[in-house]
Length: 64
Image (cartoon, rainbow, N blue to C red; front, side, top):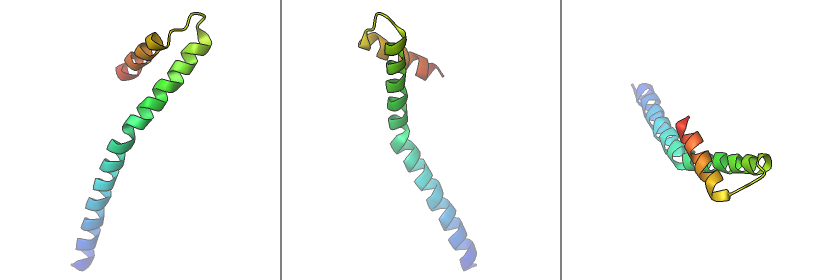
């Protein structure tokens, strides 16, 4: 009986920890992706506007 309680408690704590980490670092991943997209836009376009590039990248990333 104690073994089942420990297992269930471990699973619940693991789920909560994974949920917390996902919510904590999801913005970090999005900002890194947007930054990489802006750098790619800068390298590929002759006329570069950072504001327009950021808006374009945000639209493309949120679309996916």
